[in-house]
Figure 1 (cartoon, rainbow, N blue to C red):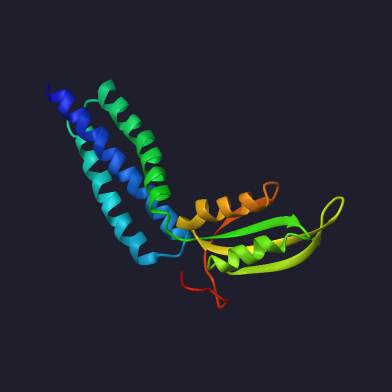
Figure 2 (tube, rainbow, N blue to C red):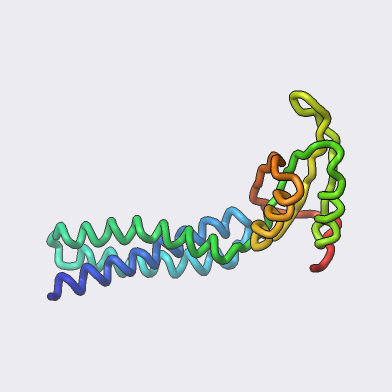
Length: 171
């Protein structure tokens, strides 16, 4: 029974520390140094406790190794899931549409999104590229608007590290 409790502790503690590590890395990329520091401190403290528990008696047990490795793998998935649900940060959308679909631009602006346009050329025709900066939590809503008006729109989505200046209406 003692080995079961040890393995469960190690498994769930690894999920915690790897999830924190995943979130820490994402916050580092987004430039949030203070939160990255706090998450990193907690992550490594939990990791140290887990390693000490896993190697504490000096014997290597296959069940401890399995709990450690499956906790690690599960933590990566859980951390990504948490980050996705938090939807913190901004995204930049580049949307290429047919030249004559200005109603999409007007609709996005009516909904409070800042839209810049650039004329461009596709393989067979003139197009318009829209550049839209949004909060990550708004992605589904904006995609739905775009695809309802322009179902064949070519959309690329990138994480935004920083925005300097620009027009952003409060929604």
